[in-house]
Length: 640
Ligand SMILES: Cc1cc2nc3c(=O)[nH]c(=O)nc-3n(C[C@H](O)[C@H](O)[C@H](O)COP(=O)(O)OP(=O)(O)OC[C@H]3O[C@@H](n4cnc5c(N)ncnc54)[C@H](O)[C@@H]3O)c2cc1C
Image 1 (cartoon, rainbow, N blue to C red):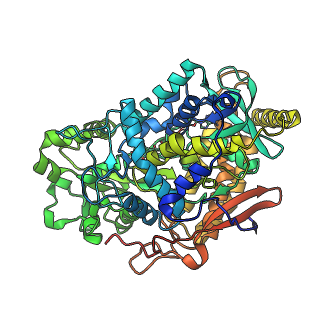
Image 2 (cartoon, protein in one colour; image 1 turned 45 degrees about the vertical axis):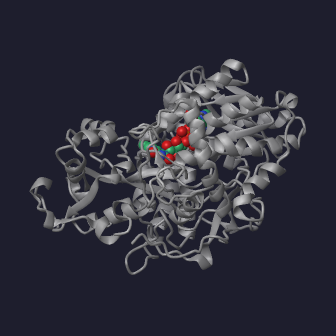
Image 3 (cartoon, rainbow, N blue to C red; image 1 turned 120 degrees about the vertical axis):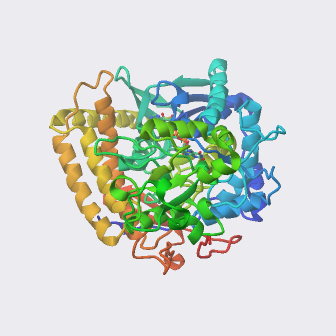
C-alpha cells in the first residue's frame, strides 16, 4: 500500500509555560458562553459510555441543548460497563509517595514515551476531581475498615492508586454517569436516542455539523444537525474478531469521520492484555478478561521444564518459574501489560506454556489464600473467581487460573489537539475513540480515568470556547443530503451483493489474519503479507457477502456487514502504520527492533512522533507531530 508524507503538525494547541499551570491557563483563556446563549447551542454526543455519558450529562447541566445517541437499548449498556479492575487517581490517600507528578511520570513512561506531556499532566491533575465527582454521585467505591476509600495497585506503578468497586468498577461508575445523564434527560436538556447507529458525519463549510443515523429498529435513516459533534464511540479492538471488548464495539463512527477528513493517529498501537482466559476452540466468538487487579495477589508462573504435563499442584516450588518476579524484581507481577504479555508469549514459545496447545500460564492464588485467608481473597475478587469458574469449570480457589494475552484496548484513534478537537473543526473526540493520552501502551485503570477526565472536565471547557467563537455559517443542505445519499448507497450496495458468505465469517478471517500478522509481534514480512491479503479478502467480501433481510427492519446482519466493511479499511491502515514504524514501542513490538534482553527497542531519532494519517483519494498521507519531552527524560524503559 502506497502512502505519501504530508506537512508536519506543528501546533497541538497546548499552552506554553510551566506544565502544572497549562490547564489552568487554557481554562482561563477559553471563551465562555453566556448561560442564555447555551440553550440555543446544540451539541450532538455520539456514545453513552463513560466518556460520552459524562460529557452529555455535564453539557446538559451547563445548559447546552444536547442530543445523544447509542446503539444499545439503554445508555448504561455501553461497553464501559465491562470494566472490572479500577480507576487511577493521584489522591495519595495511602501516603505511599504518590503525587500528580508521579502519576504523570508513570503514564508517560508506561506509554513508552509516545504520549504528549501536556495532555498527560492534565490527566493526572484532573484524576483527583473524578473521584470526588463519582463519590458525590454515590458510586460505591470499596472502603477500608476505617471508612476511607480503599485502593489497590495496578501495573506500571509502585504506589497503590487504583480506586475500585469490587470487580465492577466500570459498571458502578457508569451507573453514576447514567444517573447524571438521565437527570438531564428528565430536565429536558438532553434528548436520548437509543438503538440508533451513526453512519456518517455531516461536514458543512469545513465544520462538523451533524450526523446521519439509522434507527436500528425501523431502519429509518435520519439527519441530525447541530453546532458541534462529539464522538465518544469507544475502541476498535474487535478488528481482531477475538478480543475482550463487547461484541458490538466497532470502528464505524470514527472511521467514517476519518473518511470525511479527520486524521487517524497511531492506528497500530494495540494493547494486548496479559490476563485473559485462553482461547478454547475454533468457534469461540469472545474472549474474557481476568482483571489486572488479580496480579496484586496472584503470582504468575510456568513449569521450569518444557512440556511438563503434571497438574500444577504436583509441581514443587523449586520446579516453578515465577518468571515476572525473576526477570523484573522491582515490579514483579505488576509490570505493565505490554511487558507481561510478551513475557507470557516468550515462555510459551519456549514450550513451557500450560493447558491445551501450551498457550497458557498460571495465575496462582495459593500463597495469597495462605497469607490472607480465603474470605479476604473472596471479598476482593469473588465475582472474578466466580466468572472464571463458570467459563472454565475450574475452581481458582483450588487450582491456579490459566491465562493468556488477548487484544484488549486500542491506544490509537482519531487525532485530537489539546482541546480534544479533531482536524475537522467542530468535531471533538473523547475517551477510547481518540488517541490522546496513553502513548504506545496504556497503563491499567487509566482508560476510565481518561474517559471521565475528558467527559466531565476537559471537553465541557474546550467545546465552550469553540462554540463561543460562533455562530458559524448555516448548515449547507446539500452537504446533509450528500451524506444521507452516501449512507443509503452503502446500505444498498451491501444488500445487493447477495453472495454466499456471512459477514461474520469474513470478520473471523480478517481477525485471525490481524492476530497472526499484526498482533503481539510484528515483522516486516508479516505486515507485508497482511497488506497483500487484506485487499484480496476485502474484494471477496464485496463480491460474496450475504446480507439477509431488508434495510427497513431490525437487521443485525446488515449492521454487522457495515462494520466489517469498515474494519477492512481500518485493518489496512493499522498494518501500514505498523510497517512504517520500524521501531518497537509499548504494545507495538517489531521483532526486528529488540534489545539483547528481548525488550522493545525504541528509535527516538526517527520515531518520537505521533503518526497522524489523512485519507485522500490518492491514498494515505502521513503527518507527523513531533513529541517533545521537557520534564520526563526519555530513557530505555526498565521495570527491573
Ligand atoms: C473487559 C474489560 C475490562 C476493562 N477494565 C478496565 C478497568 O478496570 N479500568 C480501566 O481504566 N479501563 C478498563 N477497560 C477499558 C475501558 O473499559 C474502556 O476503554 C472504556 O470504558 C471506554 O469508554 P468509552 O466511553 O470511550 O467507550 P464505550 O464504553 O465503548 O462506549 C461507546 C459508546 O459509543 C456508542 N457507539 C459506538 N459506535 C456508535 C455508532 N456508530 N453510533 C451510535 N453509537 C455508537 C456505543 O453505543 C456506546 O454507547 C476495560 C476494558 C475491557 C474490555
